[in-house]
Length: 616
Ligand code: C2E
Ligand code: CA
Ligand code: CA
Image (cartoon, rainbow, N blue to C red):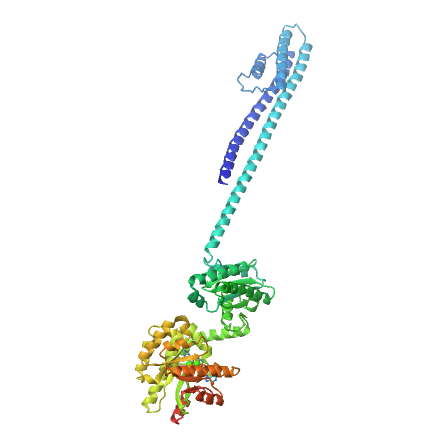
């Protein structure tokens, strides 16, 4: 392409020089031709005048000389006037005749002067000469016209060639530019894609998606936020290389499914986002279901028949009342994704009004939680645990409540997740521990009856290296005997980091805290883990005692668990027990404590104090 381009330019340059030369030549030539016609015209007119003067007896030899000079120069090309001598046969013939006739006129003039002939003969000669001179002028004119014609044609042809060359260069140049731009575009597009999966990096996705939303305002777009359930499992069990392989394959599947004006991006490890267009909503789910089916098939075939389920939150533009901002759509799709309940078949959730209300509530909580902590709007409720051997209260669990300024009490399920997300849960947990310690101190100082209290600790605190030290510091500040405090935590952290869980529990034990595993049976409970954890208490989740549970099977599981942990001298607490017959059964199978509505609901500390005072 470059070679053509240079050649084109050379041709154009040569043509330009030629064109300039020819144009100059044309100008000079037409000037010379004009002069020639002019002088032939003079020869014609001056001879007439000469004859007239002769006949009027006013001979003019200067005029004869003048005409002689001109005619000589016209014929020979040599003379003072710089006249051209065109090699045109018609003109040359006419000129020859004219020259001959001029000589005859000169002869006629001298004969007239010598009175050898009369004026009539001279006049006759002059008329014949005039006609010949006229013909010569015409021949010169015709010659000049022809010349101009030829030069003009050459100029036009050259102009056309130049124009064509120019068009060619322009075409080649723009083609070159276009292909350059194309490859530039391709390169920059590649740079903006995730190397592993080939989909857009999230910033590029956002930028492009926003552009589409702005450019196609009437279009029905949906933003999808997808996630694999427990992708860590794949990485841990089958290795990172295989995990990468799955993600890269998923990227291929998602990209292959895209239509015009649709996009795909990757947010983080196993989270992908899509911008799809739709006619009706069902179409979105069916397309995504299809893609997910493909990746499950891939995992199934390449991973010993194992696969992970996927979940997906969807936010349609028509469900958004405010400005269409991609960040908002992504947040909402992500929010919908988080509401997907694992283990159900509802893997695709649309963002809707109820989610919106929850979102608003959470935002409200988020805005108020810092000041609420400072204003000490949180209080601690106590839910007694009944010792099944004695039938008396054997301790209590501290459960936090948010008592807002307008006296509404908000339950922890609504605000704990927000505190966890905003990494403020440690502050709240410590606040609860301190409230409990303060209350125990007061009870102790007043010489009243005290029983152990358990406090909940979020799994996020286990990632804080100073967590145990901080708890010891609070306990010692209030000088609470260690046996009065128990720490409850869930074992979900074991899925993320088993060794961290074991190390922290050991540290807590060394610091004198009792330790309890909470919500056993709710999630990924593992009996084998219990062997490596030096815990004091196991709290069996209320799920086993709820309505609709498969009573016989669940009770068999509970019995099995109780039998097993008894061997490790671990106390058992059954949570969420609401019916008297369950109490009897639990007593029979050797459960130590019951914490449930069947005996007591969580209550403010005043009420709990009263129960203790009454010796319950
Ligand atoms: P949890 O630790 O499993 O606490 C027991 C929950 O079961 C309490 O709910 C309690 O009121 C409820 N419950 C007890 N007996 C029954 C019953 O017979 N039937 C029914 N349906 N429910 C019963 P609550 O107080 O709403 O607390 C919910 C969760 O919030 C707690 O579950 C715990 O995970 C968390 N939480 C509460 N306080 C704190 C805290 O100070 N820090 C942390 N990190 N989490 C807390
Ligand atoms: Ca608990
Ligand atoms: Ca529990």
